[in-house]
Length: 131
Length: 131
DNA sequence: TCCATAGTTCCAAAATCCCGAACTATGGGA
DNA sequence: TCCCATAGTTCGGGATTTTGGAACTATGGA
Image 1: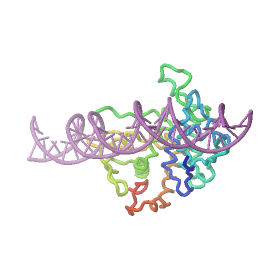
Image 2: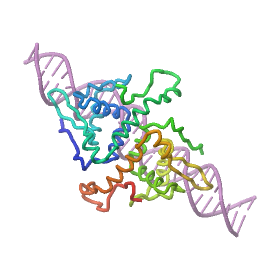
Image 3: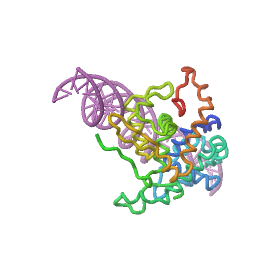
Image 4: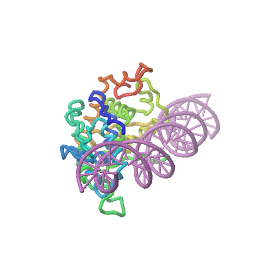
């Protein structure tokens, strides 16, 4: 059980942030944490939209978000407490996170992605805000 | 030689944009096109910083940017004319591109990434603005 | 002490990325 | 017209990354 790694804010890089949030699942997780202020457990977001994410993948997603500098995690007893580092990150890269979250939210409204799919009318891709 | 694919602006997705720009090379290429208004050839950006990018990789980078909806390319004789779709994209996802480009530019100023590397003091990672 | 819960780690299959080599398309010359 | 140079694309396969099932670790009760 290695210790959790949290980069100092000055070591946080734009490419790591973009990479972390370029995965819709991770973006949804991050949006969730933002919205809740603090999501208690990783498993609290285990289902995004209609898709259940395996525990190991989920663990990895949190790790990516953490090591990109987007969230801070601490073990609280048997579970994990994750909270976003929005304030720090926003001070370093003004407007970046807001623009990204807003962009995803705007994309949810535009449901044109369902049309080319002949089946599964309920939607196929998990998106932020759909948890 | 397949035809060039340019998604309609309403089909442009945030995750594709983030993925495209999460690669520092591609972000630098895009920043270049932005700065120049229009870069005539792909090979005009063949060297980013101190790194020479192979033709095939470069071709692929342009393809990713194009299919993410970030640039529009047209064949002009033997070469390619690439211009950014900033206006369209910015209308759809306000502030997103500006925040990303600004974030990369801010990161260039913070040269703390050189310190943990024991060799290659000339810098290892190409970054936007260093072309 | 034993069990349930919450995450992590390991590992192998699948998906992606990278880049050299071969190819295609266009624009000149000779 | 034929040939060549230039600019970019496609192919192929090795390297890297991602994914998720199974096994493991850590903590809090009963």
